[in-house]
Image (cartoon, rainbow, N blue to C red; front, side, top):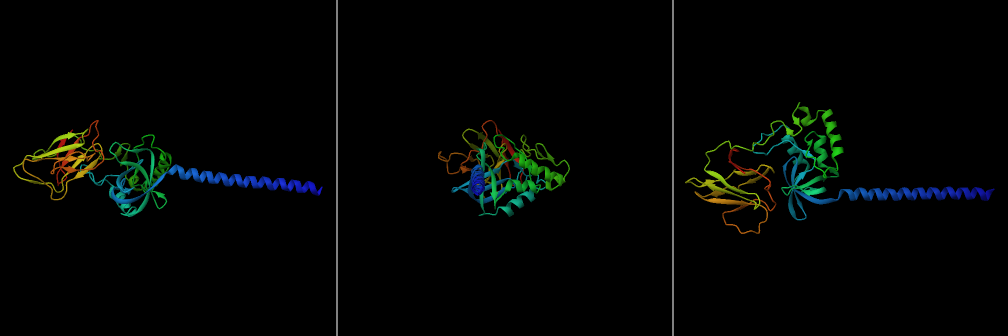
Length: 295
């Protein structure tokens, strides 16, 4: 009888050992899979453009990141007023993501948008910044384009909670619309001021350049002036004290910089800016008034 009890005890011990080993193995596999799903890339903050657009140093190169699945109110758009909670979103981004801050970038399936910006989730101190914006009511869930929908369900849950608590943008009745925020449409058609001597003469979408001419008999100081790619909502700001001579035409290039240019020409970015299927260019003066539109 004693031998029988010893035999039963050994069977129980073996079973427990196997269960423990299996559980431990499963935990290791789950942990490994969880880490692999994220594919985090180390980066450093270079600048905050606004609440949902961040510039980072990644692998020794500056990249502009457009946060996936979120949209914050405008603060820097020359043709839109500063929208409620836009400054708060930008300030929160600056406070959370100071220059030099170490962060991690998570790419979904599609890496870039048509303007060359990285589409990503941004992790800081173990938390996802996209989610932090939603939690505080500083962003809405938006731009849901498969296959980049990894976190869309949990984002919507966070948004619903913020709505229920009337936090941030959800504290203003009917402020958040399905396609954006109230009064957030870009004026894409007519210039507000039509008598400017500085005009756009050409926007070459495929070759990635825009040509601007000064038709005045006086030199034009372009400090504070800018060019806007309407579809991509991307800005080129003229360098301070940059001057276009009377009667002179200059070209602003983007994309591949290996092409030959003249000394009077300007660089925008090595990324492609212009949408080949159609992308109006706006020329905006130092008073933030549209003086010309082409394309």
